[in-house]
Length: 601
Image (cartoon, rainbow, N blue to C red; front, side):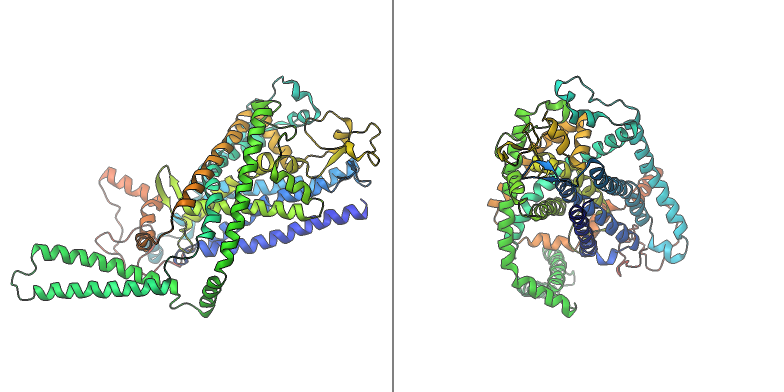
């Protein structure tokens, strides 16, 4: 390989390695920021950090893919560079494909094996049995392995179906005679099995992407714009202290009023006293939360960080406005491409609505093509765009929560996220990333994501130095021989098109789901735009009881045990421990027992 080509490809991989190192730091900070401190588990934290790092490394591989294929051709002359022989191009693409398959296989193993194992490992923890020595790590390991085996069996069935079921994309469409489509259909059973499995996971991820990424894309900029609190922590503390003092004064008045009565308080006074006691508990919790927000008892570094956040709050407003403009631009570009594909796709649902060339001006695609003139601005912009969509997904999950239909199972909050919620959210993000890759490559910037900055010369001699007007962008539908020799599609687009061509049902669902994504964004954006932010004290009060509420739905293993006891009518016999109350206040799922449970393995 020529020194220039080797230097450029090496710089691309070095930049990716640096990005992955930064991603690891981000994954560590994110995990420990969102996880509840008193419920931290080494196994859960390690699995979450490795999974988030792998997911972000996967999602950042698309800009590397585009950069590598673009580096082999001259966009000005529409020809391959002198050093870019077919053998050398294969040598560039082979490591890229190995990294792709390695990361996607790692993501699949983490989401379908490691994360379920960590989830059930955490669920099998019982603090009482641990203290009494009746339960050891071996028992927890076997129990977690037993539940995880069901997921492994599901994965095996999934790939066996893809291996034996014939692909549905071998239709006799005239457009499928093109060399590009022939290469997509030329896959062995192993590749066909992999495309079926990832195609199914991508379709499941698209359903999550519609709800969470669509809502988060609108909420992330708006949340930055409206991030200034309507009431400060000191003001909330002072208001709560005043209300608490007034409450206790009213209690004293009621007690003094009934002090001389032999029969005690009247029924009316007793009801009023009960209401005051409930209000006192609420105000006490609110006062504790206000103290935590002020940083009482926290380190000096925490206080300094709080002050820095307050100082730079105006920058969050400017950043929110900028992200809002980008989100609207992305929405408009996606709408244009979706309509263009629905109307002008050469083979419609038979090939996943592949579009030969863009027929309408598409702003995002145009920005990437123009920015490619100043290396490496376009690759940086692509990485930032993908991270923006990924961050929007996190915002959507944090806002909507983890739900089954309308029932909220887990709540995602900074410093209050249960380990089970963290693991489930990681699996959801893994599926959403597959959908984000599809959206970016097929809808957001289709021409750029498939061929990057590559062009070809349509002149008969293959030399356009004197005929620059004959230089044309690469297209899947080009029948020109020069196009076949010059245009190298990205590995990601090739894989996605192979999925949609061999399994058209996946392509149809994924494509039409983009319109649902656009609708969700529009509804959430309009609603949040005209909704006046206000202080919700009831939400602040509920935060103090969030762990207890989540525990009712989170303790999967013990919930099954409780159901069986209800059916049989017999309770499980276990010795009464000193820290366990006899009236059932101990939850049994090992979350909290008054002094926290930070010792979980």
